[in-house]
Image (cartoon, rainbow, N blue to C red; front, side, top):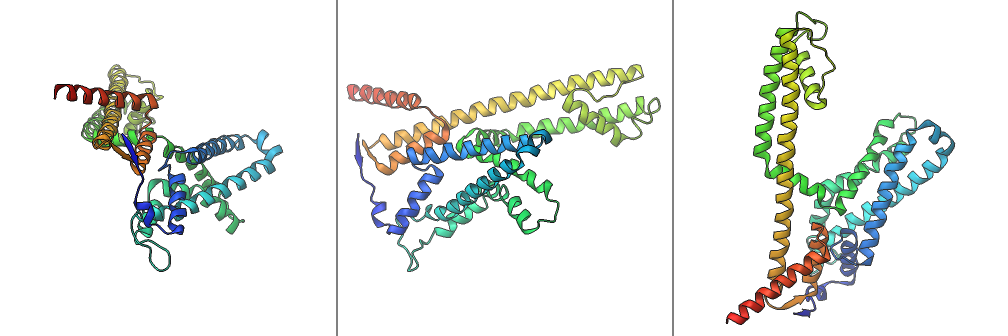
Length: 327
């Protein structure tokens, strides 16, 4: 296995090289000490922000340290704003490899990459998590405490550096038929049990079950929490409450099993995808720098350890030796 130097970088202008390097560091397209530092620094700052938001809700802590909390918030907003601007600017390099620059120094695909980021999930999170601070500066007399809760959205920035959130979303999408069946069963159960509890308990407790919608509210609370905070006064009402609680446990078990199996399948699909990419790269015995960077980025994105990758390489080498010996 030999290494080959990439040719696409030779066609980039100095401006494009700088922007491409910024993109590699900010997006983790190349796993090195600089991208790792950005990842750890941003993740640490996000966790510190979440802790600060929690502590700010305690008056005994906020009042004597209000100035420190404000200074930390200003610092965080400055860092996150700079991060957002750098990402918008550097994402212009996503599609400019191998493309000649225009007279103003921009590549034809610059705005395509920027638009993709700005309107992506992470782009919206990055934007919304800092907007409340600037709105308070523009409208100091307005009560924007609710908007400041959007700072909690900063915790979603952590999912950029871990594939768990994406795996869960992909797992739910893959098993959407099973989820649809469970939701349909839940809807039918809600209509049936709500109507029955209204008929059975409505006359005995008119203040608790004055209508079927009120009974549906009780059913929803019971399904979610396991107890609807209502004591039945009739025999059939007691039976319905017990059946509803059993149903809530059954639905929770069904959904948990669906998510668990789908998540495991998603992780296995990602490992299979990495193995397929690795086999394709090693097929010709020459690994370019770009292919190395691509494999490292996939390894980081899929959360695979060096031992797992080494085991895959060893397995492929053994398969190659066996194939050569047979020939």
